[in-house]
Image 1: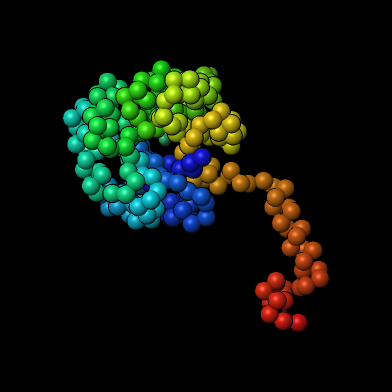
Image 2: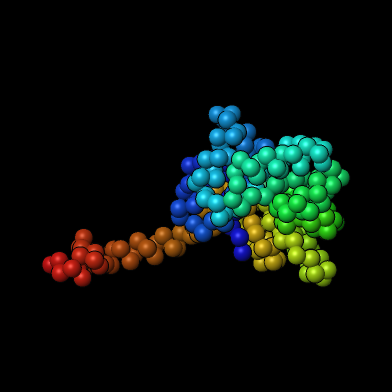
Length: 230
Ligand code: G3P
């Protein structure tokens, strides 16, 4: 199971990398455009510095031809290094680029997937990950989780090694059902990522533990007691 955050906000990335089991970062042009300073190269270098070389960094191409996508993949890999994936929206030019890049050993995530057949063909072109958009499917009264679960099933049936990196979530319920369906990776906005561990009863339980401890030991903690504090 891989947890990835879908953000280019350096504060959010830093926080998630410090407090959570974070496997990587995904971005797309929309996410990048939300970081207003406009210095794309500095931004992606900073993100790489924060997450280190071993976490995945998926950066989306803005080119629309196979030639352009391949060139961008080379240049981006050079700039960010480490565990790099070029994200390519599914299209004929995107699939052509995927096949070329895989021959060169560059890792590819094929994104903006809305159907099982898009995912299958992307996988056959060599995608390491395919990224179906769960919430955007739910928004058009389709069934995002069903699409993901059928992609997972298709990959199993056909012995395909590509993994499913499910994206576009708005609720913990969508996340839960998606991972139950067998998706190997999810990418989430940082706020939703943090919500995965939120429960009011947990907060109550922690507050009760603190109150009961203080009723006997006041403000002394375990270390203080072990070190002989009275
Ligand atoms: O990674 C894809 C994702 O950014 C799309 O999410 O929330 O814009 O539907 P959303």
